[in-house]
Image (cartoon, rainbow, N blue to C red):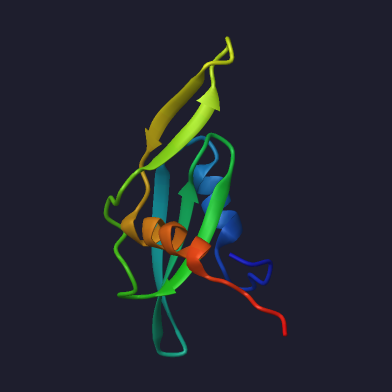
Length: 104
């Protein structure tokens, strides 16, 4: 989510998820000006929570394809671990590298 987050339950989600492990998501629903919205917090590692907002029906909060985290072990060997993520967030991350901007 961009820095403009007025009205978004960011602090509530941060407090709720602070002690949860990576791969956890929380989904909230609200109706604002007659539009059904979904607010989602996704904790992809032990410390960072990402925030998403979408119209209801834009995607599923059910399990999607996991994110494959890559990290070095204590000896410097490459290790991987699958991290759960909701289908809506997986679709976003799978599609976002395909968006190209052009300044002309």
